[in-house]
Each structure stands twice: as C-alpha cells, then as structure tokens.
Length: 445
Ligand SMILES: [Zn+2]
Image 1 (spheres, rainbow, N blue to C red):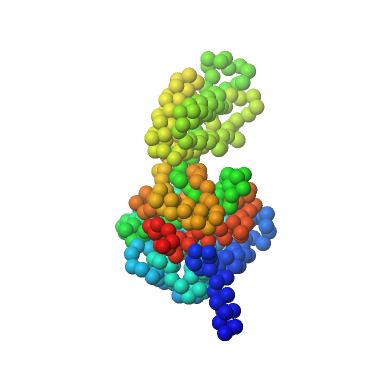
Image 2 (image 1 turned 30 degrees about the horizontal axis):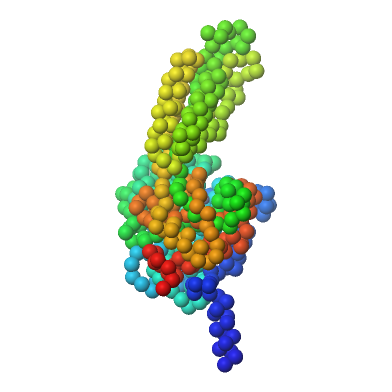
C-alpha cells in the first residue's frame, strides 16, 4: 500500500494544479546544454552559430529529432527540411502545433529560436513520462532558416512549408559568407528543391487548430515589468531597403560654392531627419511605427576629410503592426526623396525593397492562454512584438496563432542572452495546460 501511495505522490508531483502533466523542464535544460556544447565555439563570448541549412542547424535538428523518436513521436521532414514531430492526441481534429526555428545569427545566443522548439519537446516529454496524451495531436515544429541574416530573406522555412517560397529565390538568394545559393544549401541539407519550386504546400492550414511560438523576448519590456512571460498581440511587418545609396558629386570642400554642391552626405542626413519627422507625426496620431537607418557610410576609397561626399550608402528599415501605416511611410519616403533630390541636386537609388506583412495574433487563442495563466495564479502580459517571427507566416495563412514571450535580459542575437529556466518553465506549464484542455476549451469543467 505504501508503494502505491508513494507512486501516486510521484504522479501528483508530476502534475500541474489543473491536472495537466508537468513539462519536462530538466530535459529541456539538458538539451540547451547539449546545443551550446555542440554548436558553440567553446568560448562563451563567441556564443553559438547555427547557420541556416548549415552544420549548426543540422546538429540542432538531429538533437530534437532524437528526443522525439525516443518518445515515439512521428517525425516528418518536408521538402525544405522543416521537422514536424507529432504525438497522438486523445481526440480527433486539427492539431496543436508548438515550435520555432533552430538556426541562429552568427555568434548568437543559445535561446533565440531553440527555446520555442525545446518548450514543445518539454511539453511532449511531460505527457510521455506521465503516460498521458494531449487533447489533440501535438506537433512540435522545428522550422528552418528563420534568421534573415544568412540569406537576406525572411521566413524561408515557414514560407516553403506553405508553398510560398518563390522559385527564383532558390537561385538568386545567396548565403552570406560562402555565397552558396539557397537552393543548393537546401539540397545539401537533404531537401527537395523541385517540390519547393512547384509551390507544393507541405502544411494544410485546416489541419492546424493553433500554432503557438514560444520565444525569448528580444527587448527589455518583461524584465522591466518583473514578469516571466508575455502574450504577443501582433507582429510588426516591415519594408526595407538594404542596399540604398545616394549619388552626388565629389568636389573640393573649400573651393565648391554651396549652390554648386551635390553633397550626398547632406542629402542622406536630410532624408534621415525627414523620415524621423514622419515617424513622430504618425506616432503622434497613434500609429505603431519604427524607422531605422542602421548603416550609413561614405565610400572608403573615395571619401576624404576635404571632399564633398559624392556617394553615401545606407540601409533603411521601417516597421509597423499596420499595413496602412507602412503604406503611408512608403509614400512619405517617396515624397522626401523627390524633394531632397531637387534641393541637393543628387540622385537616390533605393535598390530592391524587401519586407514582410504585419500579422495579428488570434484573439480567442490569446484569451484562452490568458485565462489558463490566470487560473494558475500567474499572469501573462499582453505586448506587441517588434521583430519578425515564423508565427507571422502561420497567422497570414489563416491559422489561429499566438506567441508566448519569455523574459530575457540583454536582448537577443548576441551571446549574452539570459533566459532563466524558471521563466522558461512558466511558458512550458502554460503550454502543457493548453495542450491538456485542447484548443477552444472554455475552462475546467
Ligand atoms: Zn528567433
């Protein structure tokens, strides 16, 4: 009898207050350590590097697939090498998908992306070790090539999963550093570029009841508010000019009169101020927006202290939660360019525009997650999201989508990301309770 009581106590200890299995946070901690060991350079200040369709990302995919197979999950790899690991649910119906990406920026942090996949693995392992099943099929997704730093394109893996990666991107988009075309990189990782080129969707939106992407917060909001987790309300879209330039004319700085100058540095400075004023005006009217000229350089070979700048290269990144605001900003940019070209006698060449559409998270799904968090005595702070994530692609394909942010000191895309496992556990518990009651449930009976 005592043995039975002891084992019952053990089981109880593995349950959350509402009855859902406790997530296997210890497993996630071991996997974070393994990822750091196997995809880092051994020097903490160098961080980790998991190149999109490169060695580090491949290792990360092998690690999570190994754990999924150990739990008897069905593992499927699509044409773009995205990995979907499914645990059978108690009920029929569309699945719950939890996941994120496993690539990183060069010399990045161990948690950006990986936290979302390992949260799914921790939840699945919690069900597995408790001998329980989630309400619906639970698919843990490990998405490829989310970080645009490698190929200069956003959401490669998730767009390919929905048949929305343009075939020309496979040939024309090159990986930074080794200059390998995207298609060749996908093929070398074992993918099927012919299928991607045909635009064959690998995922059926109707088969996914909810997509939830847990992710470390990349700003200071949760740390400042003293909260462990937050619920994202929307993901900003953007338009970008990564390779813009202004062409004027090099001239002697002392001998060239003002009205003869074609000063590219002055013109770009005016453009920066004009776009900042547009931002202030739109923000004052209540629009969400952010404008950044992240790179502004004169030509190293031709510019000099005593020369009027004949050429300035720059980049521009404009973001908003709202497509209409991006359209207004784009019109402001065009007007400012025309005005400044005339005033400064220069020529702007903005180059190709890239970007992404804004995505709204699903209100009903957010309500359910907020209610579960409140029932557990916590609260998940609603917040916007300034950076792009795969969740945006899922939302744009009509799938009810949510993101759970996890408190993180020091921002992301650097080796000093600092997520506490206690905060990670809060997100995993919320997900476990959600998977136990199932999407659309209105609360404990
Ligand atoms: Zn990320």
